[in-house]
Image 1 (cartoon, one colour):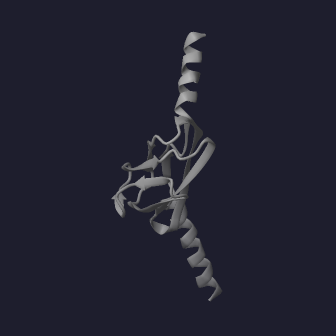
Image 2: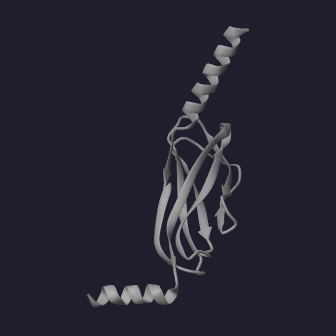
Image 3: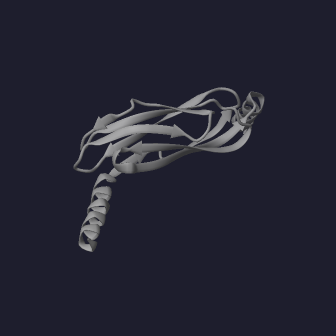
Length: 134
């Protein structure tokens, strides 16, 4: 019984390590200064560097102000990639960081984030004009 448990544990670790050979572009995205109330978006790309086909099961935003757009249960083989468009409604003044969990088959969960600073439009225009005049 103990031997079976050890073999099962080894296989689970091996399969998990094998499946996690991915690269995530824009894993920690910096938006900089954005205008309060003006929606913004960016794209996260997940590249399969492993030897098995992966499935993007779902993507879950950490709050209601963020919306991930993707094709659920999309399969992507070795060397292929999938993209997730992440939209933010810009409902924050000041510094912010938001998270999205990406769930792949085999129980793999990766977290991506974006951060920036929400400013009033007048403040951003004033900052832009000031830097131009220097």
